[in-house]
Length: 552
Image 1 (cartoon, rainbow, N blue to C red):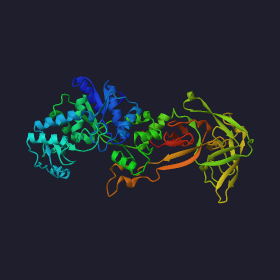
Image 2 (tube, rainbow, N blue to C red):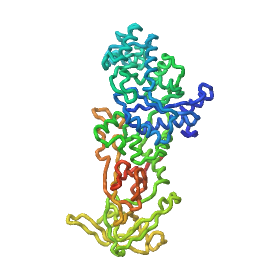
Image 3 (cartoon, rainbow, N blue to C red):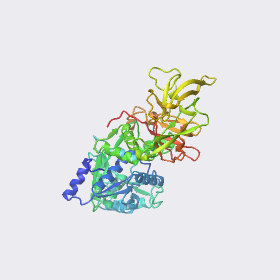
Image 4 (cartoon, helix red, strand yellow):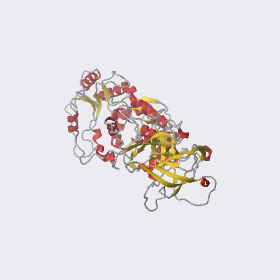
């Protein structure tokens, strides 16, 4: 993160270095490979990598892969791609599963110290025995097994002699602790499942709350940054490091997670949207995943700047989605070539323009960035305009095309509507106009003014294209907390979140390829969809509209 962006974590790191408590900074980004990364993870990535960079430290990428039932190599590969795309390089790549042997040895150490025991209670019974926030827990009848019996049972657990759920290993801490996380938490469970990294070598797996602090300690992480939902687990984190006699002592620091309006961030919920076909995959442009945002057309620069501006604090930040849109507009403003696309075409015939003639008009590729140069646009007797840019019987203050009215064609001429052609059902199918050759753009014509300027595409060379227009996938602004009152977030899925329409683009875009970005006059910023575009069909995803009322 940028040095002039102060936050409490940077202050802690600075004080640790100045006091001699630490002589370097090592952070880590530790996703579980059970889904694709989303915009909330982008905050963690930017914070971990950015703060380490600020202090000439380093950041590792580590996969917390301790649950084989939910994890997959597909997610590992996707996470690597997303981190790199955001612009970061990890120092070292680690897997929690690479430490399974050492974690097992540390669990044996706890048993030998009388700090862990094998329990026969079921998961439901363990929950019942745990107590509540106002009532202490009750000790398991198996809590006082001898060290020898616990060692024997734990060995049998590893050797596969018990079924799933038949035995667990629990830390022996304090069943009356006001912090429920310290009431003898489960630290190992039996799971006869093939692991993406270790295969069938193990049938017992450490719980996250036990594994995570050990991983940090093994890797020499100095500052273990996580979101505030783990704040209550910090005493357990420290207990594991101390009681497992880890040489290195990492420090856990919590920050508020990032939520967006009209968005769910839970990987469980996002997976449900994918599995139940509400979207066409984790990279659907309506999804808040990094891959979805990338496919929609967001840039890594825009996402990084958005995260930095949203700040780092202890509070959970629910940020207006318009803020994210603001930063992609700002980023693309100078980068994206300007062009014209007609999304809902209506044919216009300019009756006094010479038949068979095509002239090339000059236009800047990006008026805000003249170094991008010029482009040429064909113009002829037949063009397409937007259907919404014509009304046969317009209201007052409608300045676009209607019978008898004159408008300017962007980069071209003034045209005047002379005749309306309709089909048998009364639908307007063609407009016939005349043009004034004296009004060509760039000639300095000052004879008269018109109030409307329309975009258009020359008809004979226009390239057919498909346009995907998006609205929020979730209708409720506070969707992350929406599983209440008998409703789930699925009740708030917007059935009209995607509109697909067929239109035309300028011929100079014929070679556009996946992830190329453009600003279409009046329509907004668009990205060439890398997944659906083929040699025969170009598909554009609208990233954002041109304007927003959002203010920083």
